[in-house]
Image (cartoon, rainbow, N blue to C red; front, side):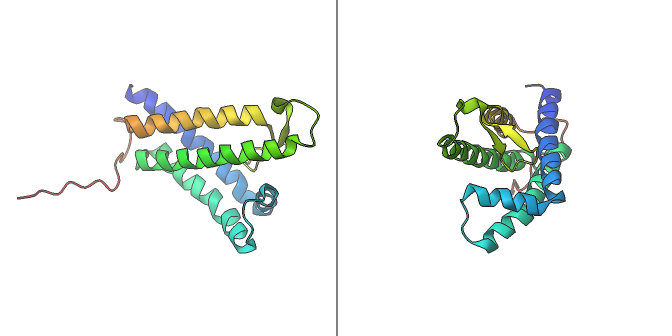
Length: 159
């Protein structure tokens, strides 16, 4: 794949995470309330830590992608987050379907992504596209337009 196309993929994924992470940092209490609705974390201290740190971590990883620093590591991390977020959205949607009269795709709720109330199928499709893009970056690397594409991979001369 051409370096310019990989750069666009990096900027889209990185920009999404910087923006949505930043939105969550602006109102951590609202994000904490959404985390509670998922019923995944039982310890209040753990919920507070996730609500306080996860948005900044998303911003950081997104910024790394935008700048082209440690692209494969950042993309792999974000792919893991996207997979976890998608599973959580799917499970929450199934839970809400028990008391919903419409179709699965017409179900909407605040998933905690930072963009407010979303339709389930649209959110899963969006996450799926971002996930595929992140995997593409893991597989293809950063391309020539990255500042520092490899972090942590040192070659030692053996004499």
